[in-house]
Amino acid sequence: MINNNHYNHKNYNNYPNWYKLAQETQETQETQEIDYRGIHTAPTKASGAPLHNLTNIYPDDIYSNEGARFYGHYGHNHPLDQQSINIIQNARNKPNSKVKIYRAIPDTNYEIKQKIKEISKIITYHNKFNFFPMNNPIVQQLEINYPIEQFPYDEQQKEILTALSSQLTHLNQQVSKQNKSINPGDWVTISLPYVKEHGKANLNNKYIILTKTVNASEIFSNGDSIHEWGYNP
Image (cartoon, rainbow, N blue to C red; front, side, top):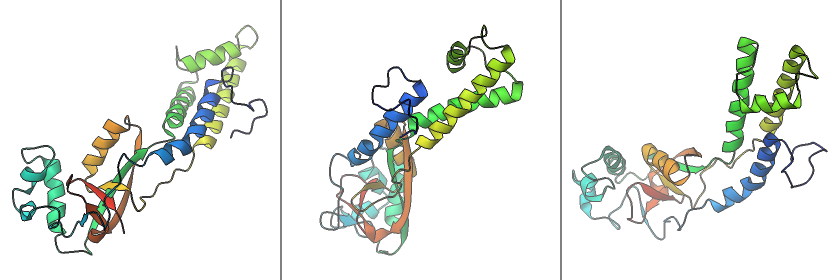
């Protein structure tokens, strides 16, 4: 939590927006990470077939030239389907062959990072032009806090810059360390474009991508998708 004795309870309505954002984001981070496990259980050694040998799940024609057309998601030999089929076919009977897997998870720091970016741009603008951008709501709020009637222009500008720098410091302190590892039991994909689609569609484009290189024998399919696998080393 922010080390500030003036802000010591959970009713944030009267506090600065940057403080409310930092506190509320921090309080939801652990819940988001726990909740993000997927709707159903990923396939395992007991319930699926490994990447290097899918014959117990798919017919042999998954290894044919028609594999992408027969078992792809997008139809018409779409490049994303063909990419995953190529990986499947290259790993056939090679349990120790290496394959890169991907997983999209919610970026629990997204809102804070956006605010950091916004404030950093204001400070950079000021450092370049020696004045603040016009009609910026953050600057306008600080101008209310430091009215020109009480603060000569140069002093006002200095106070605003100091306040922005303080906000930036506090926000950076609130960026938490997420669990950035792919764990046994996780759903993963062998397609980078596919995981990006998943992040954009299912995580409101507020995501980060985890990646790991594993053996073909360590990921498993239940036959539902050539793109989606369970990691079970």
